[in-house]
Length: 358
Ligand SMILES: NC(=O)c1ccc[n+]([C@@H]2O[C@H](COP(=O)([O-])OP(=O)(O)OC[C@H]3O[C@@H](n4cnc5c(N)ncnc54)[C@H](O)[C@@H]3O)[C@@H](O)[C@H]2O)c1
Ligand SMILES: O=C(O)C(=O)C[C@@H](O)[C@H](O)[C@H](O)COP(=O)(O)O
Ligand SMILES: [Zn+2]
Image (cartoon, rainbow, N blue to C red):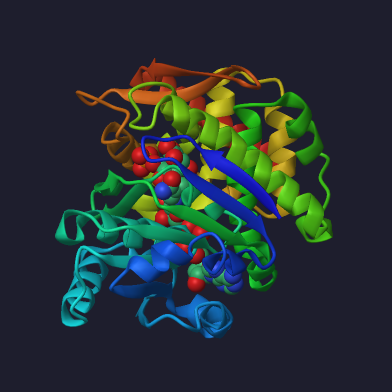
């Protein structure tokens, strides 16, 4: 079991490994005992698979469970309101503790609920996907708006993150692929050697548990270090958005949940690498192809449709196009790109993708 500390405004621990839920009894007994109620907000599918396991660690406590739609559909104003209605109906108060049990979508909406219920109650992140090594850490909470991804949300740190990696065994291949995109994102913005390892093209399913946990720890360490420097994203936290200007546009255009977040980020990183003139672009495109990232999706979307979303990105102001680019691996920077250059680069990427997909 591994422990990482996030020294944010409100510092907390991230516990990673199998059986970390045992810390409910050891390290977090006081937090649980002090709560007048404990409410688990659980992804419906995750609850089917793993709720009994989680509850077995919470036996002496009085726990209520509220199931929300599986995956991205939960990041809606409707689910947000239903969570609040449940908390009110259960007689919850400012002394209630919320547990977010699921992937990034559950963590984002449950975190948003925690940050707004009676102006803020404590919560613990219990991530269940590979991707959630990213989302469970750093305190960004959000729901989506039809006009843009994560447009409504807060910065609100959890009291702790308990990441039981045993639960990752039930992830479908598509979700493993999605999660590994945020892993390689963390490598691109931090470490050439780690990036080289990942680009070796081993099948994700061949990674041992130890290797997977090592990747997740590295990713969390990169994220934690950035969050510690710039929790509220006035500067360098934007680097964690590598690949996201285009990714969020694709997700908005396709309709939330139609493409996984990580798959969209994988395509967005290809675009950012091209704009960066990064030497590993072609190798990365082959990596994407061999792992089944949907590169061809980009050929199906008119650039103008993506442009409209990209101009509304949170890194933009006055309709500019802003991207995280790489001077080299591990050296991200922000760049404003003219529309004409952005379109030309997009067409260039499509032709490179065409060559890779032949
Ligand atoms: N807050 C942040 O800093 C941050 C960072 C990255 C991503 N995100 C957000 O996270 C979301 C994506 O999260 P995600 O990739 O974890 O996906 P998700 O939460 O949408 O879950 C994806 C699917 O996997 C299923 N699932 C979850 N855990 C499972 C398990 N252990 N076994 C089997 N199935 C399981 C879910 O039911 C769902 O169908 C996006 O909305 C993205 O915007 C937020
Ligand atoms: O934590 C961050 O900061 C990130 O940018 C991490 C991203 O992987 C994540 O998708 C985040 O939700 C994007 O935030 P947004 O502010 O661009 O919506
Ligand atoms: Zn992301």
